[in-house]
Each structure stands twice: as structure tokens, then as C-alpha cells.
Image (cartoon, rainbow, N blue to C red; front, side, top):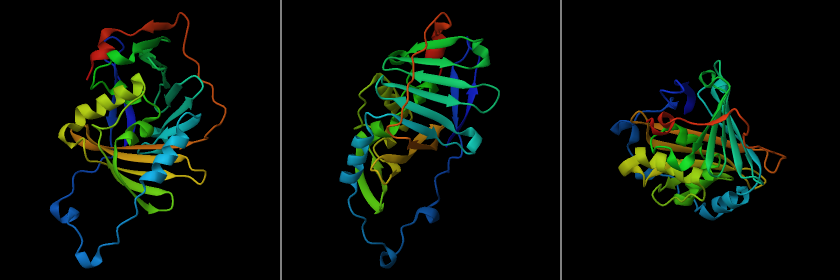
Length: 255
């Protein structure tokens, strides 16, 4: 799970995200199929219900939590549908990192190395493997689910399935940059990414977990996101003023 951030020097490095808590690939004994006599009945197709939930969750205000290994490592977020702006905040450690993602730009602030400044980056210029690309799309599940390959309903409101990242599409610069990032690591495993999802009683997509291939220094990582407060009043403003400065080239290119 994405559980912590390592912040580098403003001029020398960009933000580095570290994925931890990732299980290694099982042995043959761990993954062996059960005997045919004990196999469960096939789960019903859940694609229509999950697609309806994703559609209902699209275009509304919401809050999000990117779950870490510990509660204090959670990263919180929100989405302002009216202004199409998302925010992400990480508060563990001595810094209070905040990222504001607009349709075209990413604003990074709250780090001690920034000395009170807010770095502005053009999303399209961020390198494919720069960890900042992980935070250009607050609505990541809605983006990834455009590449769904199969979905099974395992219980009321609970789904499991596979994503084909090469088929997923992004409607914004941020969602396209996130896809570029995960595809850069997934390589030949991009067509079979496992995921689970949950829909709440109101029909909104409430939970999403995907096992992203090779994302943690060559190992798989769990991307665990929870949505809540659907349709609640949320206003996020784009940073302005003299403290907003253009980011140096190093923040774009770091991988």
C-alpha cells in the first residue's frame, strides 16, 4: 500500500513516493488451483452494476482516503466537481504536504524545503516515471475502470475483476498522466491487473483496490482508495499569488 512519502531537496529532487506493504508473488503451492470438486459456482457478471456505480460517482463532490499501512500514513483527498479541482494532503512526519490538481497544472506546497513557496508544474510535462504522476488524478478508480476486462459480483455491493490498463482512457491531463505512470511500470503485465471494488447502499463507488504491477521498486503494490461524502459541499481553490512559482526542471524529470 502507498504508505509514506520521501521528500527530496527542492532543487535536486522531486517528491518520491514509496509503496510498502506489498506481498511478494506466491509460490506454486500458494497459487495452486483447488480441486474441481471444491470449486465454487461461477460468480455472476457484475459489470453493469459496477459501471452504473462509476457513472453515478462521476462529476460529483467527494472525499477520498488513500490508505496507508498505518492510520497515520493515510493520505486524504477531496474533489470539487464544479471547478474540476482535486486536493491531496499528507500530514505524517514534520511536513504537511498538499497537492492541488487542476485540469492542467499540479501545485505542490507544505514541504519545509520549499520555504513557504508553492511549486507549479504543467502536468503534461511531468516525466512518465516521476512519482508525482501518482497524484495528478484524485478520481483514479473512475479512470482505471474504463479498462475493465471482466467483473464478478461476489456479494451484494462487492466486486472483483481484472483491468486492461492499455484499454483504459483518461479524460483529463491528470488522468492520462496517471495512466502513463502505471503503464510505464506494468509493461507486459498491464493487461491483467487484479482489482476489487465496493459500492455503497446509495449506489456510489465507495472502495477500490488494485494491485499495480512492479510499482514498488519492481514489486507489486496495493493502491487502496476509499471514497465518501458524496455530493457534500466542497470548494477547492487554485493557489495564486507571489508565493506560487514555476517548478525547476529537476522536479519534472526525476524518476
